[in-house]
Every structure is written in C-alpha cells, then in structure tokens.
Length: 207
Image (tube, rainbow, N blue to C red; front, side, top):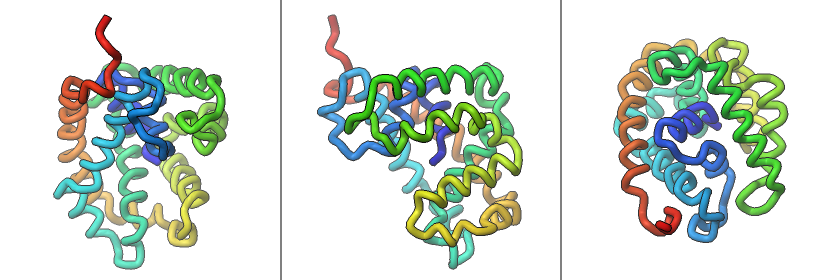
C-alpha cells in the first residue's frame, strides 16, 4: 500500500509510474503484460523482494509488538510513505504537490485504458479518491497516516489489528525513522541500477 514510495522510485528510475504501483495488484505473468508495463512491473517485484528481505527491514519488522507481527510489513510500508513525504525535499527536486499531480495524472491515464488483468479493478477503484483526497500529499501529517492505515485495514483479513496502530507507529518513531533514513537511499540506488539492468525480455525491442 506504499503508493508514494513506488511512484517515487518509478520516477527516479524513469520507469512507468502507474505500473510500478499496479504491480502490487497484478497476479498475471509479467512476460505477458503489455510491453510498456513490463519493466516497471519487474522493478516493482524487485523492490518488494528487497523490502521483505533486507536486514534493516527485517530488524524493523521484528521490533513491532508480537501481537502486530502479522501486519508489520504493512505498518512499515505505510510508515515509509509517511517519512518519504515528510522529508520529501531531501529525496526529490520537484515539490511534493507538483509530483503528486503528475502521479495522479499518470494513474488516471492508466485507469482510462479500462479494466483487464493488467489494469486491475482493485487499483482502478482507488484512483479517484486518491486524487480527490490527495492521499500522496496527506502522508506528511498524522491524519493522512491514519487514513492510509484505515485504507490498508479495509483490504486486510486481519483488519482489527490495525485499530490504534498509528499509536504504535508514533511510539516507534525512532526505530522506524532510523530504518527508513538508512534503508531508503539504498533502495533508491538499487532502483536506478535495476532500471539499467532490466532483463531484455522486459524491455521494448530496439528499433
């Protein structure tokens, strides 16, 4: 559910904005996706794998209370979007508001292509409220953080665990912010490298 992170990494790696987000919702094989989406879908997969397996993120997820271990990955993802928005000017030269409008436009264009296995309805239904309520910009404040957690809870089989989860995130501010500030620059570097090292089958054929 870390929309801002995937959009940011897509932008700095010069890959498809919407497809980097859509990868979290698509189950179909990347190799059969429309060619213009493949690289970004592959990048999304690599990003998610690193986030789940890096020693810094594993250590952070293990720091959450035992009762919340099953949703630790989701809490970490939303928290990372919050800190990315909060410190945005350190990670991107474009103002967050301007970037958000560009991202909303890209997502709207993606949605306009219609619903199919590579344009999943589960994502398409989120795009209008994301834009009208400015989800990306709202990550900077606690209200936006709580809204993001509530949205994740709606789609999670253990929704009840998210109740008051913002209080745990606030209590763990030092641990989460330290992990983010240490890990995220590495993730940015990996994303740029991956965009240059994408397997040939996920790249458009040279003219």
